Image (tube, rainbow, N blue to C red; front, side, top):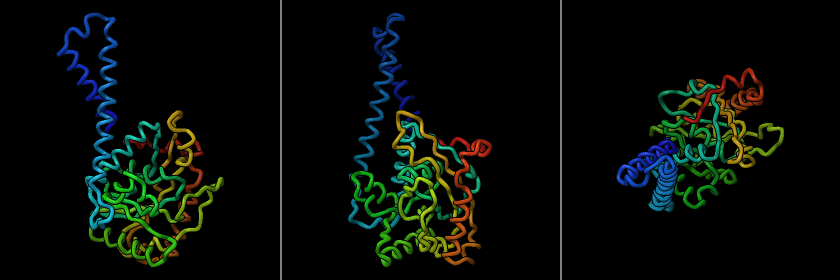
Length: 288
């Protein structure tokens, strides 16, 4: 959306400039001028937006707890990610998106391959208020850390059980009382194994759904680990498979370790599906 907006504004400014300066284009040989103006204006709008994004982050005070996710910051953050994906030539393909609850909150659980996992899901589910639970180091990053904080993302320290439980309760409380869903990676860290066998799950994260009384959306992401090797010189195709939704009633009945086993079973069943031609064709273009 932002890329199209920049290009459209660039084209309008180019036409307006030529219209107001009739002497700029007097023959066919001068047709390169409006094209160059279009490119220059489009880049200018992009740079202005980048400046806006940076300045916006400067208004965030990370020392103050963010009691309520700021939907404006979250929307700007998600749209910026979508723009980055377009420029980086990252194409998202999705399957089963219609399974995601249209109303009400949910807990999104996914395998973890790279930092592009959560970005892929946020881009795919644009229009829904979703934040993620992330490692504390991500909040120390300049600009991005501020945007994460303001957008409602929460840090979880898996090395300290008491701190982790506090975060789990905070996520559950927000999903129970606010119109926002959360995403989490049960593996706890990026999976760098070449065979992509899922790492052991942290069962405690499933307490977020149980305490909030919300369904669990099980996702399998494929291809995000190849982005750094290919982008932007070669197109990277990322597959986001919304495998199954575990309804709230089932979440209530099952224990955390049972939910963990069920989610893991569903993710494992979806491993490698994008490599099967017949199934790959069922994935739809997701860069909306």
